[in-house]
Length: 362
Image (cartoon, rainbow, N blue to C red):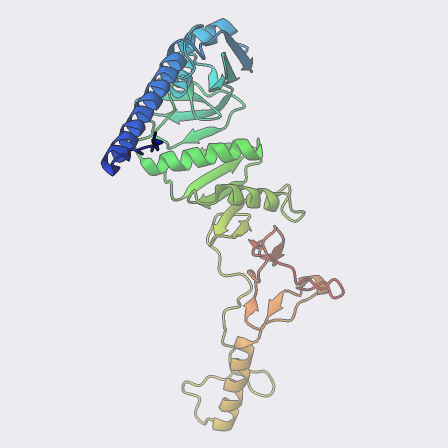
C-alpha cells in the first residue's frame, strides 16, 4: 500500500483584496470616531457642564447678589459651554447703572463666578445741555444743572446724545481719545489737585490746578509723562507756592512763568549800540560834525561790536548758568530740575546728570 503524501495548499490573497480591506477598515474607524465625538459634544452641551452654582463677588453696595445674577441673564441649569460671557457682562453694565465693571468666569465643571466693581462719581462734564456726572471710566451716572463740588470739571468735550448708563462720547473722535487718555491717567496717578480740564481744542489742552496754576499741555500724547512733569515742577522749591503758567516746550520740557505775557528767550541779550564819545566821555555827533577821525571811529566800532556780543558774567556762583552760546535751558535734563534767571522764567526737562557738586555748576 502506497503512502499518500498530504500537501497543504496555501491560498494567496490578491493585492487588490488586501487594499480594499484596509480601505474599509479606515472608513469604519473614521465613522466610529466621528460618532464618538458627536456623542461627546452632544452630551457636553446637554447633560454635562450645567451650572449648579453661581457665585457673586466684588464691590457692590447698591445691588444684591440676586439682582446682579438676574441682570446677567444667567440661570442655574444653563450650560457653561453654551454661555456667552461677554454678552452677560454687557447686560450687567447696561442693566445696573452703578456697576463699573463686570467679569463672568466659568468654573468647570458646574460653577460660575461673577465679579463686579461699583461706579464712583469722578468727573463733571459740562456742556450746553447741563452737567454730566461720569465715573472713572467715563460712564454717565447722572445729568444735572449744577456742578458737583469736589470733582474735576471737563469742558469742551461736546458730548453727543448722552444716555444714562452709557459711556460719554463726542462726535469728535480725537476729543474722545484725548478724554479717555486724560481721565484714565488722572485716575491711575491719583492726582486730586486738578480742578479744570479744557478740551475745547484737543491739540492745545489746558489744565488748571486747585492752586491756580495753569498748565498748557498741548495734545494728548504722553499724557502721563506731561502731568507728572508738571507735578514735579510745581513741587520744586523755586516754584512751590507760586501762581503762574506752565507750558510744554517740545516733548520733554516744561517752562514756568509768573505771567502769560510773551517773553523773549531767557538769557539772550539783545545787541545794543553805545553812543560814540571822545576820550573825555563827551558824545560825538557824526552828522555835521565837520572833521572826522577815521582811526578813532574804527576803534569805537570795534569796542561797540565787542560790547554787543559779549554775555555778562554771572554775579554769583549759584547763577553760573551761561554757556558759550548764551543761556542753556535744555542741556539734557529731564527729571524736574530747572534753570532760572532774574526774569522769572524757568525751564524743566531733558535728562540732566552732569552736575558738578564741587563747583555747583552744570
